[in-house]
Image 1: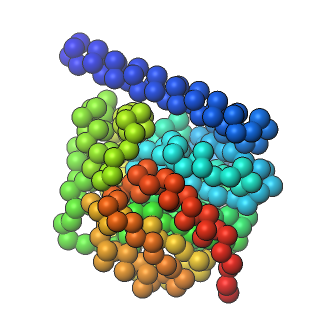
Image 2: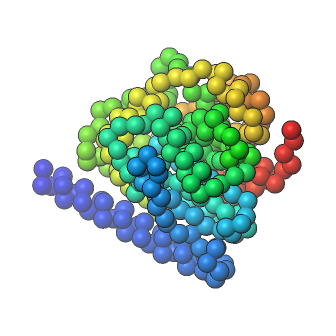
Length: 308
């Protein structure tokens, strides 16, 4: 047991060192591009009226068009670390760490899609965010769907990365990935975090980034993983998707190990104003694997005219 704890401590310290080095290098890179404060990313916290405190990163012009980023299961705002430096400083960008993850609060329960969506809707309301582009990856995409279904003016556009219709179905590759969640105990094993993150990637990512995301998965407590297992297993009616009225862009990697082309077709059929961009030779973590192409496509979508 002492040997296990020592090994776990060493890995944790190594990952923390990577995060510190990344933040330091990221800040220096931003400073080289422009010395104005609005160009540099900052990490902040907000306490919601429901008592949950969320950590989030923010960058860019406070008066610019707003982009809100939501990560996948086991991640944090660092999931967008390869995208944030590519976004022009003319945009106001918020990358939120959802409850149960990263440096946000880790309640013992409350991990349904509605719980996550309620947090983000309150975040948007407290910061008086309107006319935003909401971007969600995997778990974050289901939260984004729920937000868009309920939205009353916060959103102009919706972007779903590695998403699906959220309906119940027979045993599938997604269940193969999520079934171990219910069996986890604290501390989260390094091998689970490593294998889970690796299962979402097809095209290689930088080693520093991968190790950082493994560390973020280890930071998520077992109670959150248990809640996610129950939440992912709970299906919803396809009719709910018809409530989404904003233009929606689907990003999907053709080598996605979790969601298939038929899932994208279901989204296209049921979200009234949806379109699809499929990336060949790319897996589930599309924005990790192809950050330059993803960012260019995202900005093109945001810049396109909104038709009634």
